[in-house]
Image 1 (spheres, one colour):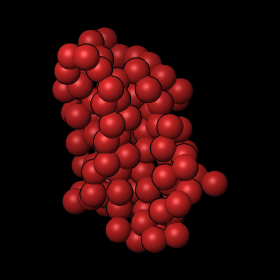
Image 2: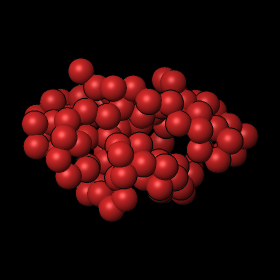
Image 3: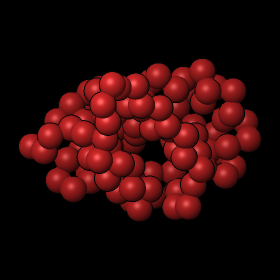
Image 4: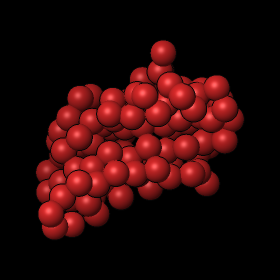
Length: 104
């Protein structure tokens, strides 16, 4: 079971899930998607890696905030999460992401 952490990043709450131990891997979903989409990958990798996923703004346990939600804002949130040490110092980390859109 993943541990859910609520971090305050750039004046917004960001919900992240941490599971496993080992080198950190941060899973990044596309815009308008929550971090539960990585559950199967986290399950497969948690015995060997510290797996971190998060809810994008306005979804799950994360605040919407006042800024538009864009690919750039998701990247900014990812960097802020890593700098905040969401998995006990996850900078540097391996990044794994997914973005599905017609225009990014």
